[in-house]
Length: 228
Image (cartoon, rainbow, N blue to C red; front, side):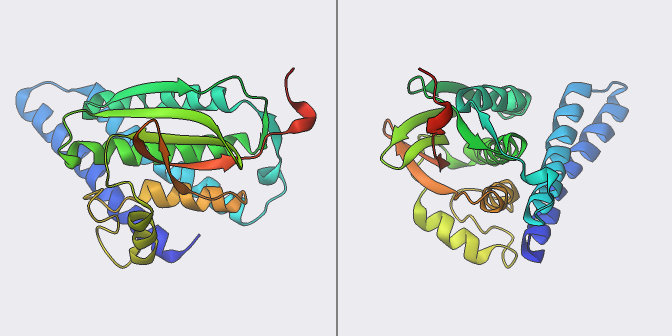
């Protein structure tokens, strides 16, 4: 994990913490509290920190952190959607789950993979309302490609390009808005996901699926444990 990523997280955490402060101030003035909004905002910030900490553990190759197991990518996407549900409602984004078939298990670090997808999803949920796209839908999808099984998050926005991701990696830590045209924030969730996947010897890539643009990773099926 780089210092640039830590700086990006610090920049990104300013927004949810500012939202918490303003919501608490407004609730105090009105004599009431919107605890649901406060909880959602705080949990989003805490998840980003937890994912960063997990990424550090994985990058340091601690033995327990690197234990791999056969996992169902469909189940991980389902659990990821559950984790993102409150944040999606907060931003007015609709979540969809699209499973492209029955796939056998893949060998992965379950906690790390789910943390990466959840961090990525949170970043895209926060970014979608700024794209001026009337259809605020984020699709969690899995499908087969020539290299393995793709797990990704997709939306109807052309800003999710390989160039945007490549430029974002270069600008990370040097710009307050490294994901130009996609996210007005630091986009730390994308880079945390990038670092988590890299620590697991995976790669965050841009992807296309059913005419949607997205970000995801390619997983190798565990043929020895494939379901019949």
